[in-house]
Length: 208
Image 1 (spheres, one colour):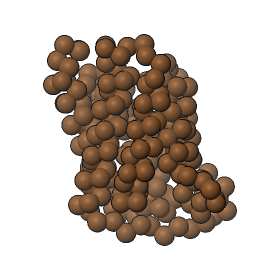
Image 2: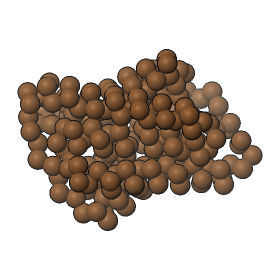
Image 3: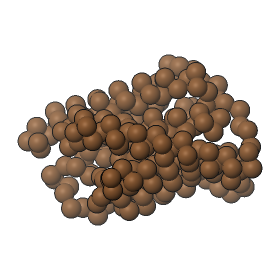
């Protein structure tokens, strides 16, 4: 249960930060910086308890890599999605019920952007937080948060910068994305997690 609570809290504050910085943004707020730093500190806060996935794509990548059981993954994903939904509702309340218009998306372009940068995120997580060669390092949280920040700067204006199925669900609840386009994010993020897990195993065959 402590792992699920940790996953809920980390995902909650990640999505809450996204909502509060993207819905009717305040002057001077640079959303990718706030989002990347919040993810970083939550990874450091919860990494020793749950592994600090906060992302079903990361959880999926860890299942493929062999560091998370399918049974645990189901609980993790439910906690992550619940955290995202409640955070989306909280963000809407904090922003005074502001109703953003869902962004128009081009399916192919969104899929490509989300796949590439979700792959980068899961690849970084696997190599900095689970690999034997980097075991015990103190930089994994910074690396993971920085990857999300850089990815949001790179393609946030193209895909919305979810890189995370739970974030994609939260974005739909907040009205930042349409429910009709949710499948694109889910497919892109989860296939990227799968591919990152496979690539890790190929590149690190000795790291079981």
